[in-house]
Image (cartoon, rainbow, N blue to C red):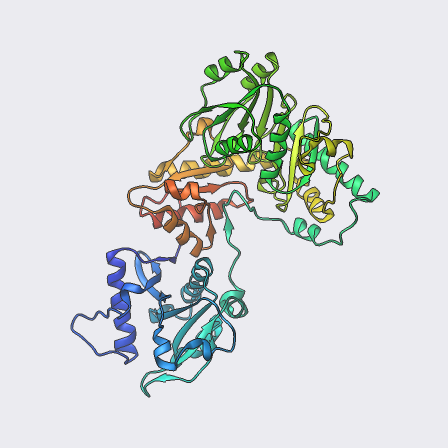
Length: 532
């Protein structure tokens, strides 16, 4: 790992920023007078966000981002929007682009430009403005900057106002060589070229024999994958699938029991509440397993007619085993329902004894978001107590096609399911990536929230050490081309960052992510096969 990009936060980083500022804009470019301290603190320092490039723990490049108006450029040429050749709604000024001379023609300079654009896109800016020194105007052009308005400055230090947008960046050298992010999100996951190509095919009617045949094939593949008896496909997300399940549970006489040990268990409670269902809850600490004996005792008490729980709780990374509950439910005529949205495609499933289970086309299946599944053990009958779109029975009675459906999404899903036809290699790969990440974290001292013995291999939740901010870490990883999960409200509240192992990421990419993560949080960098 040669270069690291991040937002400056430490006293040492700011000291090195002031020194580089002086070397560049006092000694090299005579814009400011010399001083004995050989440090130059920018007049907007308190308003600046500094994106820096580090090599071997030292700042070797920087750029300052400032969104507060008026910009310094406003004072030189007037309101910049009146001079720009395009309409912008949320511009930002960038200043003090400086890099040690020996790195200006190399990857560090291009990487700094890439980090800048990634930061601006995440922050919601649509144009970056700069006064670029005419000495490096050709280089600015290669990075995607475009000149506008008249030059400013003095004869000894001339500056050209320039702008950078997502489009001009992508047309420049830095944008053309920017590699896709390495994806460690639990969704959306990285889509294969075959799946992308399948989506782009010409659509065909959902009332055609061709579509009926396609739907049958896809259903059979999903039933084989899950061990379920029946399934219906809906146009929507996992929330829709759980609403459909809630609708079926609302038709069951008696009170239900909902198990909660994370965000998505809480959402099941909300689904049930909106349907006006009678239920009790068993709530334990987030990330803790349920006490099987006490839950089984409740199920055998005769008080409950249905049980609803999350199988893989994405919010924490725990995998809630349901085998003993399934047995007890069968013995006591209790209807068992599962949220399997984050477990389908990540671990082997046997849903034969499960009355209802929800799933989606995204996540581990690596198809496009937009298709929801409901697996069911018995064929359902339509019921006018339920909204038409949520009535599982109407889908059963219409052979799965009661309303309009997208052939494009279904073709893409069929293509994505091919990877499960040969063996358990997908499950094995997910598990191996998870173990690699877990083993590395043990060496660094970063704590994993859920113990391995009852964790899903699909996602690993990290609790931040010391004063480390998960949001700041996630943003910095993003600037280094790595996407992790940290922006959901339940993660922000707890200062957690999650690494998903769903995507087809190489060991080399996993090791690079781990090395950068460790350097960013200033902890021990793990060794991989004896080398960094």
